[in-house]
Image (cartoon, rainbow, N blue to C red; front, top):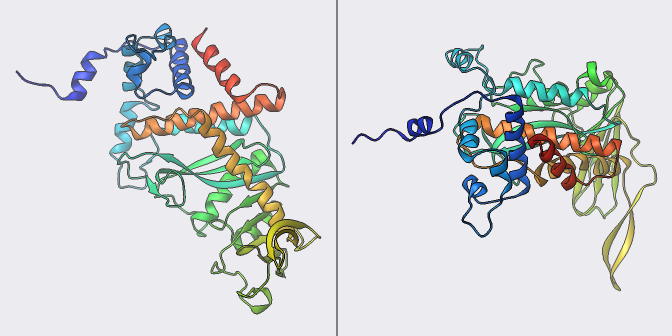
Length: 376
């Protein structure tokens, strides 16, 4: 007997019928339900013979219907996908074509429904994916080391994702100043944001050129920097030595830029167009004295204080996205990004709801969202 390939068998088993809008809402609602109620496999959500079985998914749709929709889920027309694939290797080929319609819709909504507060943070974000899509990256320092790399702009006060961009590995650099420069400038849409914002970033992005150009656009900026970055000062007046005591500060000003070095447990280098070098701030640290360990007060530069406070918005954004993430194992790379876009939409919706009403917890919000999407 001939055995059909696995994907053909599945295509025959999961016979297609058109999906209504309400049914698609139910499907998305189940994805969020699975994000809250974690089971080992998708099959377990419909098992009836298990001590730990859950009844809700079967009341929304059958397992086969759920798999049928999953199997056929696309964000672009298959014929258009084929046309784009034929352009592979040319400048006209779009590596994100399969997700771009939804991605652009989510990005537009992120910028349209909420106007962020003054302080913004830029960070790198990883979406786990092992598929051979040609766009996955390895980042040793991230909890998720292998997957898609995204650049995200977030509101430092609440973690709201203002905008984001997926790095394909083939990004063009229209300004000629490299990836780190363009990653920031492409996220700061002046048509939507206007000006007057303060942007915080880590040493991957910070350069004198970037901060100077942002200042000209009426954006203040502050970030840690690498000593070997082009145009960063390297003279002795702005240097610390291995013998520098904790709390030591050195700074040098170049027009609108102030470069500050501060000795904590290690040397910290920060550049800013917003702050004075030192305004009297102090920080409490445990230090060893002749009488044992004591809490002592050490001077801390104003840019370091502000950076530590506002860069946390990027970490908060990542934490909120992970609490009820829809991510699960899938063979399709574009489905991984589809699920991340859903996570962004749901997390941003919760943040906006909290800003307006401030009483509902994240868990209760997700429960209400699932109930509304599934029509229960």
